[in-house]
Image: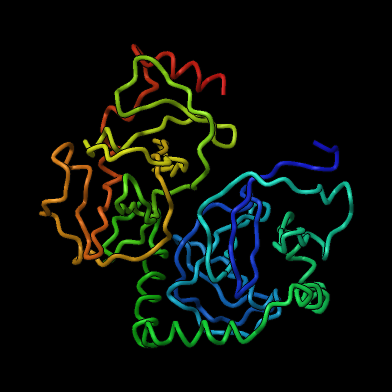
Length: 355
């Protein structure tokens, strides 16, 4: 590795046809787009504010930052809740890719080759925001024109943006969009820990043993590629070992064992969905992440012949798309998930301590 190169963990996103990446340390978590309060805001690039659990935070539109025309929020848009120093903000993007990975980049601090302060265009065309506070300040200080000129070199056409909006308008009526965005905003405004009365679940969909599953996004911290798995003696059968994730050692759960899923040949199991409720953190293995979506609660069947006989309480039900919805809250509440307490799990506790 050259001295001017560093390994970073990033979260990928897109704005129109532009692919972007943000340092994972800057991104706290993701939420689906919600209705914004369009109050008078003097800060350039701010599209409105959002009540996040009782605290009002600014929402920056990366459409504006990247030189695209303003548009109305769509149900498929995402908000990246990020931090700039002690403050929280939200970044409005078209799509986020929950998969996070390690990326080798030239250290901007060494080379000084930023396209604009805090932002670098990587050789593959990815817009890498490596210093979010500096990038936001650069835009505030009238570097908008420079940013627009830099991004024009990527040769993305505005027509694609208009086609995208038309296709989304065909899918969702304006009235439905406003209603759903308002419902999401009301949920986000509730104090943290308040029981949800929502009529739909925002989920991450994934494939495991050739069928579709889903887990609620509120429990998903991130998704990473499988690192080396270290077996730990004395743990339950569904705990297949531990894995390092950004300096933290977490246990890995094999849903095939936990849910008594019949074996159907070899699969990849090359991705780890990291789940947490703030107290318990573990990863579940998946073959492929297929995206984020919203499932109406009344479309989830709790009595379905496809639900495995083993540990049925760990399954919320099956939706109309034949996705099996995992009950992450019930899994986290299970005593066997706490594998670092004492007794036979002392080995794991020792590994976690050393990590």
